[in-house]
Length: 454
Image (cartoon, rainbow, N blue to C red):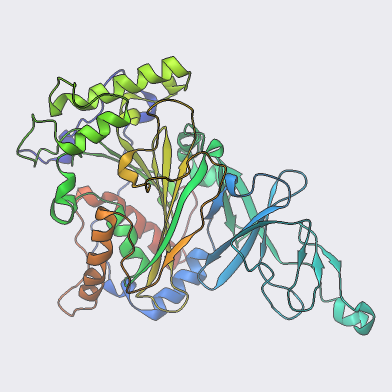
């Protein structure tokens, strides 16, 4: 059995420029200090040198589709208001009144003509400018001259995603994302709606979450039930600015899995997703991936879904993007799965794992989000209602589905091991190249030698 990643030719069908494997940068072979996973001083540097200095994914356009629509984005010790302005652009403001520091927006979503401070009812326009000061005549003019507008930050939208930055020194988001911006645009995320939104608190460092989701090397051990329907052989691409991509073949067994012929229950679900009756399907498990691709091409031709822009592997597989510093996006033509790894404001050994599933509703028989995403039965996928955010506190089962729940159970043990005197830092294989790429980028920020586009 050959697991040499250099021989993993996973793509099928006509060559597609989207699939092209990229030359890998030389990220070295260093073994980083494990203190990055638990040291409070390191966590403070991450906040000041990384999270306040780069682009952060705040949300998606469907959560603020009309003028006056807004949502709240919290990260670390900060909170922001993201609002759709009257001219259709998106604005972002610190969620804090300049008068006494009260937060303005207390709910996660809403719509308003203006923002009103709940403490002393100062009014602010959508663009952040002050509209009125309560009892203005009781303030000395020299006091108000210090500024009465909201403090705003950079905010840019691309491919249906809304990013903010607390820094004015970052390049435009289009330049920051590079090729990944064009790739993400193919999925038309701006026409998708949030159909599930969950948060759960985990007893681990946020980078432990990034590490776990940036590789599938652990699947055979932690999630053996996935081996019957997912191939371990993947393509990994590394882009500038810490961005990465991984193609993960679905609808065929891993070479580690003994039975390569039987169409097992997991693969049957993927056949059904593509509109194929699994009970009448005559092929083998090794042939189902191609069958899924062909069925989705036929569905697209019948209903004008525009799948000709996708490669065959994009139709069947999971195409995953890592957006530095704390986001992963799993892309499918039907739905997109966003992961955010949100650091705790005070404890470096806790983080919040956030998942957002977006789906573009189509009135087509059998069409839906991939079953593996785990949408609950009866979920409204029409986009008519925005689901509430379900937040599970530390110590309670997150109920994210079998696979993600297994990760939540294991990561606290990885976190405890990171503190051991016997652990001197991770040893990454080429299957974990995305992890090294991420940490090399992280170190550039921490060491103050960041160069954009590297």
